[in-house]
Length: 259
Ligand SMILES: [Zn+2]
Ligand SMILES: [Zn+2]
Image (cartoon, rainbow, N blue to C red; front, side):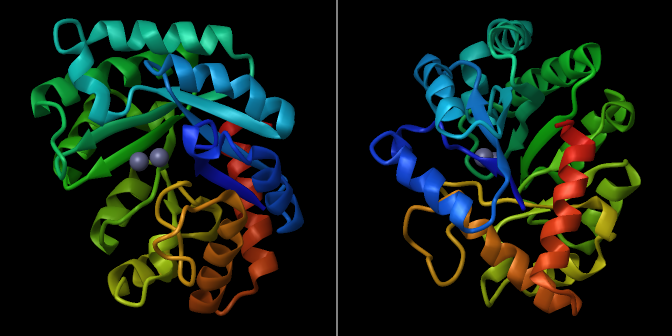
């Protein structure tokens, strides 16, 4: 089983990284994709520590939409910053997380869009998949992915929270859908329907640690070991087994991001 999206190089994990990795291994995880903020020098610096604590981690590097405002004067600089970080980290396998967040609107929307476009183009040039963060921005996300040849680049909509119609449109664009702990929440009825309809060969699972701890850990710091709970809940919804969900999502992960 692989956690397809976590922030293990975040400062929330510096004090007990070894124990967190130990629990992930005990839970049956064989790896994780760790997201790095390209503009966050402290986090980029901690990536080496994470890789030495857990040799099966790989990295995805991007400028999150929350940070897009730092590149308002020169959106192309975001892509250059990502490129430099990827050049410096040989375990990089993707560009992300990138995208649009109109829920928090931490950066002006036109700036978010430009920074997203520049990084999508970079991924195309580097032939790397993209990890998309989209919140309350479905139409603009799909439009930009369409205009910037997202179909040829490929990638995943991480922590998917849309409805079945949005899922269908993302799948039509060739993207994978990654489900996080939200699918375990009792009230996430539409997301449970999405969990049933995504074709098995397009499904990924993640924790988005340290955020979004699943039931019964809600409200606490999340960690990669809890991805097992996501697999368990999806298995229940699909009439499958946790082992089958773990193994197919691992195959999908490796196909998308390369070993
Ligand atoms: Zn995100
Ligand atoms: Zn994230």
